[in-house]
Structures are given as structure tokens and as C-alpha cells.
Length: 112
Image 1 (cartoon, rainbow, N blue to C red):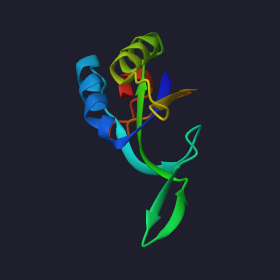
Image 2: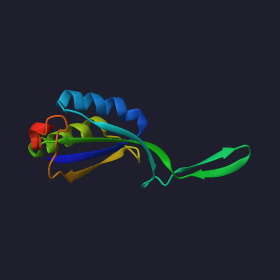
Image 3: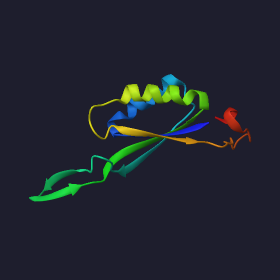
């Protein structure tokens, strides 16, 4: 199994949710986060003073899928989220050793 951490701008959340639904993902966790990458933030002026805002609001969507389905989902997401602008997002991929459904005790892919 693979865990995908999808880091996106907040305005892209509906696209991700729609793609996950179309893909048939069994669930997702969504978290508001802040961070920076190549963008390094932006300058803004507030009451006449200039500030550098370097922690930008982002959304982290986490989902776990079967090994053989991970690349298919990654391809779908990159097609739907592609942008020419810096800061469009990233997908981090982790191996998941096991999963347990608390209610039934089922383990492995059946627990997804």
C-alpha cells in the first residue's frame, strides 16, 4: 500500500476531492497547513510598512491506496492540478506496512 500526501493551494481542494471520488479512493484526511518551498513567500504592505510573508497557507490531503493503483492516481492528480505557476503543489509517496480497521480488526488492503 502507498500513502500519498498531496500538498496543494486551498483553491485546488475541490479538484482533488473530485479526482479522488472519480478514482474510487476509500477516504482521505484533509489538514490546513502552512509552509514554503521554492516560492519563498511574497512581500506585502500593511499600514505603510512592508512585510515579507514566507509561510503560505496550504492544504494537505492524505490518502492510502493499493500499490498497483498509486501510479494511476498520481497521474490523474498531476493532470488535474498541473499549473505553470510556482507553488502548485507536491505529492509525497510513502510505503504503508499495514493498516488495521479498528471496528472489525481487519488488516491489510481489505481494511482500506
